[in-house]
Image 1: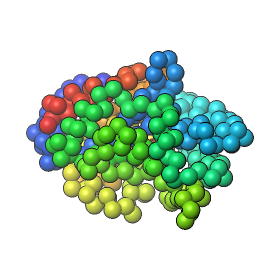
Image 2 (image 1 turned 45 degrees about the vertical axis):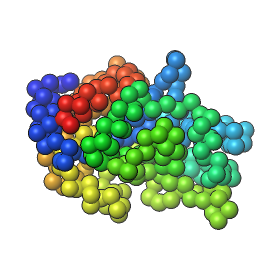
Image 3 (image 1 turned 120 degrees about the horizontal axis):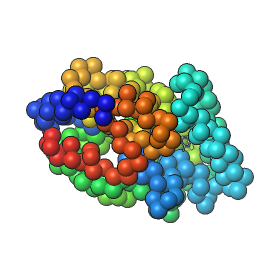
Image 4 (image 1 turned 90 degrees about the vertical axis):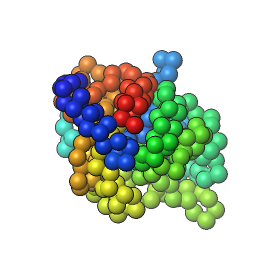
Length: 275
Ligand code: C5P
Ligand code: MG
């Protein structure tokens, strides 16, 4: 924490406002899911599809090449957002185009998720259940793949009715074959009200003025920009990769930074205190 006193004050204000004023706005990949497990990287919602058995050898190789080229750029602490933006759009666009050529079936998504190594962070059940029990809306704003992340949450048994998701959804043809992705494209740098203003959830979003924001990338910090009358916001950031070099920027931007923490324990503790 850069400013523990500020964090203390915000947490007190969130507690005072209670459940009726609160909403949680969270990123999905590498925020609600684990970054690693047993020394191995865990997949993002995109990676789950990239590596599944229905993708051709050639497609898989091309998708892996994209990851190896663009991911280091995504997390490069020495390049600016402006510099990265066109490259990130390029990554998402190329990956979605490749996936759209692979004849992925809607009916296969559940099995693909089952066979993957994805894991929600430890303590996820407490997190999801606590918010549901207290009727606190959980808004998941993800540049990942909506169909996949919803399936992950379903299979974990925690897709409660207080959850709303805005993400990249697959577009299937009448035969249930993937033909593209629905607009608008959500990448790491447009997670803000430019994509939110046309969604049903936007109105609801504005009525809860106390916010707990969870993210793992600098782009996640704008996820609450659409909340016009925001009163209090506590930003918790998971710093997963290139920790030493990115620490300073994260501590500057997030109120609390969790380094290489694969759990939701801190978030759960704060929620327990607030609710
Ligand atoms: O849910 P979230 O917004 O975190 O999803 C975005 C993440 O997905 C990015 O941080 C990026 O590393 C990853 N990604 C990926 N494959 C792509 C595009 C993005 O793994 N083709
Ligand atoms: Mg993320």
